[in-house]
Length: 263
Image (cartoon, rainbow, N blue to C red; front, side, top):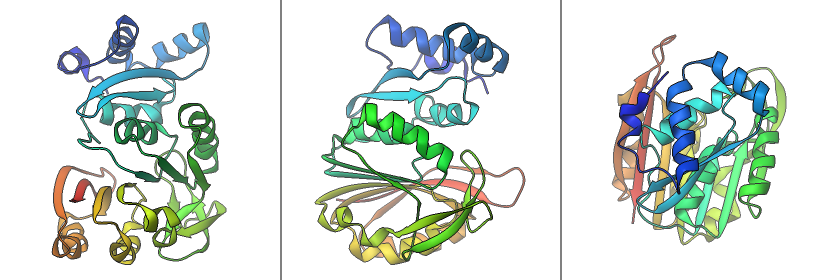
């Protein structure tokens, strides 16, 4: 999907011509896989880093331009303005961290002293580990899934669409509410994209969150079901804001991004 230079022209991008050139190339070639393959054959496969100005300062987008699954995430952050922060946080927890693109993007804005990234897909986790060792060397990584209780589960799927409980490999499951960093945090940024597991996790999690907390959540249900799930958070003083919604072309499921914020 080519967002085009009209989108790029409104972005505050870069620390010089290197960043601007990368975004121009990205905008021109985004929908042309053959061009990306040619680029990789000539220059090799390696991560790109683009600096983007956000309300919280300059942040990094680190990604492999020949990985189509990663480009979907980059589109959301670079062009759609998803995950823009306005204040720092002590702790960042990224559940469903994929390959670390959003983890780095959020940490650069949050300037947190503690970063936790959790990812169940073994292939994604290898890239996540390599990338964060470079970008956030103090980050704590968990190769597994999050749930409402500790245990093990089967994980299946590839890329950004894997799910717990569907074939594949066996992975550990961590009860999110029992992570020490949640209990110790004075201010918490929690990003959660867990392919439907939020229906079990959110009710279990609410009482353990610090007073200053923001949740960036993707739900996988109808909007009415998502709002019913989030109603107890509103009753606890959280402001619930719908950021965007889109329908899965192959089912009746809606993917909806929310900001759930309490200060």
